[in-house]
Length: 375
Image (cartoon, rainbow, N blue to C red; front, side, top):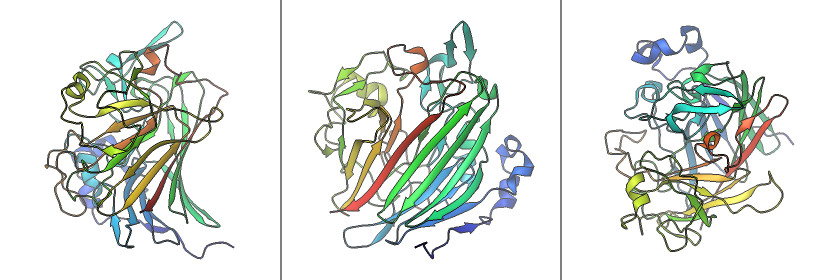
């Protein structure tokens, strides 16, 4: 039986006049402003997810706690101009690509051809470059079925955009189900060999956005190894064991328990900002538990299953109180965490890492599911 609920569409955010005069306005064709929308997905349990087709950004995730009290657990803004002009570009809620995470020195080779990318993170390329997928307007198609609602977002990244080869056709589907699961389904095809590594960059605080730090959240990461980095946060190529280090989350522990230990990797990352090598089970491409987070005060639990081989754990090291979110509260240091399912950083320059090169005729397909519950 088809749901009687409908996907709510807000055609304006009440700020388009400001948006049109924003400093970054020249980076988005003026004809695209009229197509920017904000969609709200709802389910039978009262969970809601808001998505805009600017940057394919998740702006809000409202879920109940153990007592049924609702709170928005995703950091973000009420105004579109804040996403465009945010200090330090935190990528709140966005899809990042064509290559999520870092590529060393903004260079890689495919065969005999070397490509030079936009450099936007010191000497390195980060999250797709200066105008990555988080800063473009996507085509949007609402969908719904029995027990689910979805938004399908499509974008054509043209050959040489930010320096990447090939025309890349990308489709992202956000699917909310009645059992409080948010699936993120990725598909892409190309007409030239090109690296692709897409991920979702929501910052979470399961107490509610703006409600202090996440250091008391209890985290499990299904990984016995991680990829150590150099001072520029580029992987060294090693797969290091987490056992005996602050990076051991194979059994659940508070995020803040070991974060102040003396460890070179914590110094490089200013805390946790590292890729974990997931212990995969089942057939290649099958969904595997990647991480579980429990927030003791509210009882909220989030589990992440993914087809990806890695997950980047980042604990809001660069948040410093300057940014204020939807609640009006400052986002304090370590006031949110990201768990970004992915291939490993700098894979195009690391032959021993799983390949991220998509070939013409092949399809990039990846799924990550965020499941919410309480205890």
